[in-house]
Length: 582
Ligand code: AMP
Image 1 (cartoon, protein in one colour):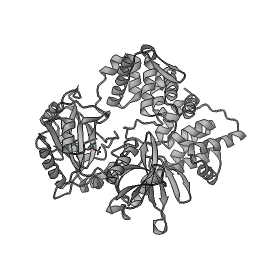
Image 2 (cartoon, rainbow, N blue to C red):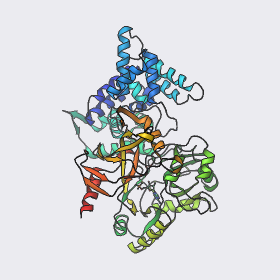
Image 3 (spheres, rainbow, N blue to C red):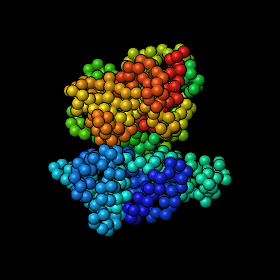
Image 4 (tube, rainbow, N blue to C red):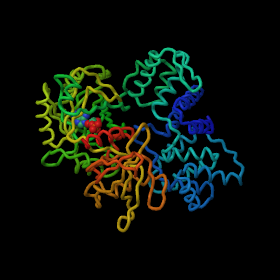
């Protein structure tokens, strides 16, 4: 398939903000593409060349793309950078630069989807000496034979910022419409979706969603729809090695509220302040995924070893929390202490020795070829006890007790806090495991509920000795898919890297995400989430959320634990604001 065909779809998607219209555009497209293009096109539609759970990443900085635009158009880098500053979008910059050049030469290239896909994928493999030149060559090879419009989307894909608005929900519905619109008798009339049989529609939509939650692979889901229809979707199970969406918890206000939610008796467990880890084991192969389903196997050889030694099952998928602890005392440490291990690419053994983690397993969802999702939590925990060999080091079952009253919960909560945890999780014994769902049969009880999880959408270069750091960060909460500013924070970070989360680290993280720059202020792609503490929420006309934080302070990075969709909502901020008034 020619890349220009896909570019037409991108343009159509970008020209509308209507969800149904976007879904229709993609559904039409999916139903007419060849099977051999399906897998790459489904990734490219999401602005990716690797599934997000694949450890490979494109890893191209904006400056390198500027050089590649220079190499393929002959325009000077300062001209390109000037254009970029004006548009704030490197994709549009590439488009304009190519257009200028193409006026002089006659454009004749035809770029295929597979060429674009392959070249961008290759970028992840290029390393070592000469890697910069190698990368520039791969990119400029594409840009030289692309039309201006194609250049725009190639660059946006490289920057992992496609901006055509194709979220997971839209892709799911598009697949549903592409394969089942006749069976479901659905049609679009005057921009409205008409569904003859709503229960049947929901059943099919649920089946597509379920297959996706279990495999996180739209290409695979599409193939199943094409070959085996609804039956195939319903029969799809987990695949060891492909991450499954984790089950999420609701919040309880207090012990009694928690018990009302999960029922009595219930399981109460330490809520450890580490990060979620999903363990996949198939004979000798072990893979580890974070809550965002990123592959972190290489970063945690100590956990791999603990699983090899501790788990007797031939194949299984386990849900757990990896928690840092102090060498010598064994005391649990806050997440921040081990956060650097997640992204670490070098000296892994050394850092594993310095910041060890203990895997606290709390669920098993797949065992020796069989799904355990529909079994009760009670049965799953019993099974877990059987497959974890007693003497294992580094992998244990999370501490928990059966509770029958709010008093018992309060007592156990106190103990948990003294042990350095965040509080408790309460779980109902009779419930299934629901991938991807935020459920009321697993609830969290935390000591403080007031810190906010906010996205960073902008930053400011510091002054004086802080001039090389992005040192003040603009924060946003969410409101119906929009991000609204709620203040700026610069307190809570360290000046020296070894002391904890530092300005240097934040600058390193935010640098590649910069979208535009104006004076000392930059706008960044909303990808980084931080937990923020503060003294008070004030109503304020300064920010478009209508609120501001008094004395905000960075507590920790949350990016490895949550997506931007999970940050604190304006509703929640409002609730805290009202609670504080009373
Ligand atoms: P939160 O991140 O505040 O929504 O709390 C939910 C998170 O707590 C889960 O995603 C896990 O990473 C973590 N957690 C810690 N201990 C447990 C436990 N015993 N059971 C389930 N989740 C736990």
